[in-house]
Length: 343
Ligand SMILES: *Cc1c(COP(=O)(O)O)cnc(C)c1O
Image (cartoon, rainbow, N blue to C red):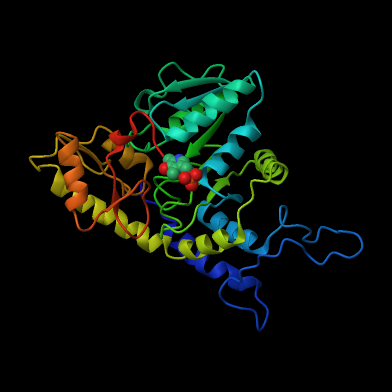
């Protein structure tokens, strides 16, 4: 599904800050690291303390809000954003549905912490996510395409069904970024994302964000952040702000390159299986065409054995052997090295 507003958002991202500038103000975003603010007399809503206010983080959130077309809150990592989203929406006695094949640490968070606090955690594979329905589920957490399996599920259909049954839908949009998929427009209540990946784009920061158009949810996530203290460092926020300014260009090129590589790899004799939503032969291709505006930059390859996989990664001059993705240095890893787990 083409994203007809992407060009406008990309331009707004670069120019929205100029509207608020006074003569002599810096064009590039200043990095403010102060934890204290000049605060005589009554607070009157002025900036007070670094856990509550930071101008660099707030400028970053304005940029993220332009990209998401929704109010955003930034966090020191993707997992901090996911924790905030889940802790702010769930109560003891409620039920959470998560993917069994999504980001491993999200499953750890649910099983080790939320389950212990009285939340019932259910897991389903992404490609059969809607089977069994959503009755009695308070929060449905989707990851599409999933990391690492690149499975998809129908975000619009699931969000509609969940809403009808009184639940909330949260989508982890890390693998697509706001330029590749628009979960809020598809009906989701909240987006979480790791900006450590493509938005940062240079493998030199960890950050994440939450986006929602639901005022009560936004407030709950903000309260979680201020009270738990999961606030981003201004330095990382400043770097991410800079990374966002080239995200559209980098993302388009990354997706284009991935499409060329996937088409070249599909007939390679050493490739036993390939997952890339852009390939017409991929099981998720039709759904990808409907709900994504591009097919992303991640490719999943199955090679005959461990040694061939390791040799491929070691001998490809253009690949860094590393966990994580989305930076200017293309990377690859043998996922099976983690067993059923992942970093
Ligand atoms: C990397 C990743 C996360 C976690 O993000 P961090 O910034 O590493 O905390 C969450 N979800 C997905 C899909 C990811 O790829």
